[in-house]
Image (cartoon, rainbow, N blue to C red; front, side, top):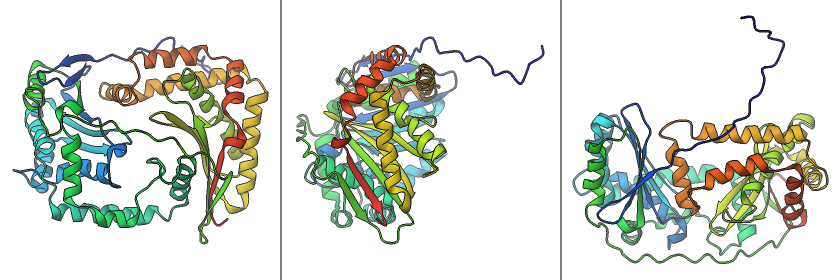
Length: 428
């Protein structure tokens, strides 16, 4: 068969997208175990999601550092012994936290899962938060903070949240250098006791799931209730302060370039317009072929890259347009960004352009959940976002059915330039 290299291959649209749903099992102690039996290889991904995060903390860094310090020592193992054993069994561990959740992820060979989950269970149930290791970890994080504090992108990101939410709002506050100095083992133990318990956690397991794997999970986490607290208080999210200033400048005299961030509020994930707004965002600045990229990067050459994204929080979302550019191009970048927003509001998108956006978004979902283990990410998102199991089905329907007219209507409804905060950090 001869292939004519001068003719572009036909583009086929993705007809449907099926993301495997988990089988949910209620264990004897009431914990929910989400089972995704998807793997052919003898590899297991095991996740424990804690239903508490930065909104639940009483002090800056408390949630993040409590989660991070779980691997630094238990009643029977030192941090070195934990690291050595996990390395010996070829396991990998990731610890992180977000606004409203904590995440503990273990990747393990199936044949060693019984060994590795034993180590993990001791970390989660019997941490000691040793003083020496806390000082080492704190010092490392403090140095990273000092480096990041000099980056114009970080300056602009923090200031944008502060302007949108207000300096006293939990989402407008950020850790300062002195907060690292105040950290103590007592702070971490208090947060641990208040939030790390079986009724406040959900489990996920993905990969090649056998009866032995399920038995191990129940043995170590699901037989009896564990942890101290039983009555978690649900944090109350205060109302954002709202916009005080339209343009905010953050001075950095020696900055070779400036970071520009423009943001406004959007509805939360439960709102009927949210999924369609994701399509609007993608067209505007959510991928390499977006309007902002074509205009400001490709046509004008003001920056190497510009993009937009929707950051979701409990009860609200924030649209953020972000780029870094030479100090002399700041005003031009902001002007052209406004022009693109106005164009979305007053001119119907080209049908081919919308088709390209739709194909990109469908492909992006496929790439994000292309393997057995990454499917877990989809269902952890559903859990932490508080959405229903049909979230991805509705996402696909939104992408397929949205029209050029709907894009323009959403832009007119939500993209009000006068309600957007402009933050410029650099030599301005």
